[in-house]
Amino acid sequence: MSWQQRIDNALTQRREADALRRRQPLARGAGRWLECDGQRYRNFSSNDYLGMSQHPAVIRAWQQGAEQYGVGSGGSGHVTGFSHAHRDLETDLAQWLGYPRALLFISGFAANQAVIAALMGEKDRIIADRLSHASLLEAAALSPAALRRFQHNDTPHLSRLLAASVEGLQLVVTEGVFSMDGDNAPLADVAEATAQAGAWLMVDDAHGIGVNGEQGRGSCWQQAVRPEVLVVTFGKAFGLSGAAVLCSESVADYLLQFARHLIYSTAMPPAQAVALRASLAVIRSDDGDERRGKLAQHIAHFREGAQGLDYQLTASESAIQPLIVGKNAPTLALAATLRQRGCWVTAIRPPTVPAGTARLRLTLTAAHEREDIENLLEVLHGVRE
Ligand SMILES: *Cc1c(COP(=O)(O)O)cnc(C)c1O
Image (cartoon, rainbow, N blue to C red; front, top):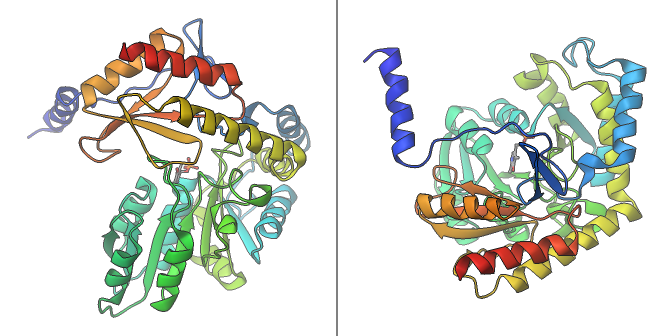
């Protein structure tokens, strides 16, 4: 088979399964409204859960950061790319979340890859929730360690896997809020099972940070759990992008030696670190509390109004409110109908979610108004008739 044939076959297979992915260039994609081809839609697809991507104080901070530092970091943090802005953000994050250290990464994907690659050796074992994000499972699959997956949120199953004999060390991996179902992990139980086995716990709280817990400190804080490695990302509630790993002094120093995504990659622009610090300040403030309160109202409103629809809701209490349709083609059709009626939603299909559970992944945000949720519910009930 030639290269061309291999590529054509793969594309044909995707097309025939109604699973071909495409991107769409948008005039605006985050916030209450999405703009595409001169049309405005209510946006139920972004991860901008607190509406921070459009916050004036954060925009201004980015502009001021660019004035002060220029637009790029100029290198890896190990060379010249680690500025006062990066250091100050790391200090704020560590203090906010109650860890000795925070290390910034360019993305959550990079942070997860880097941590797992740096920690795991040949005789070790990773035990991950089977619905963990692709960045975690892929890193685990690429690492020399063995990978076992436990049934979603099933702590007894986790304990059984932890009890199997292993030559090296074990790392348990889970999320605070799961990205495709929007449900929470039972972190206290997971942490207890992990500690009993003498293993370490890594929690990726991409969807919980900023939203859950007091001051938006996330799912671990909310459940009074302190994993050895906590990954938080800034592409969701923070409204920007990037990530941080929260850990002990020695783990931070270890990652600075062995995390290749830090060493061989340009640090985030200092202006972005300035903007992230401004976003964190809002998230911790009364403004942040108001945003979380508004989001909680939208979630309750949506779940109540979605009773009686033909589509299955998940056990989600989060901003992620999937409607599970099942097959790919009707899911795409439903997304298209909603779009015609002014609501922009994303259809998520296998292999991103398990086969037969294609869904609309609706996301709510504090940027929405009550009428947006009402409109969405009306349209959904209308489609049914
Ligand atoms: C979005 C997400 C990531 C990736 O983070 P980026 O900063 O977007 O690369 C990692 N883990 C989970 C659970 C996510 O939802």
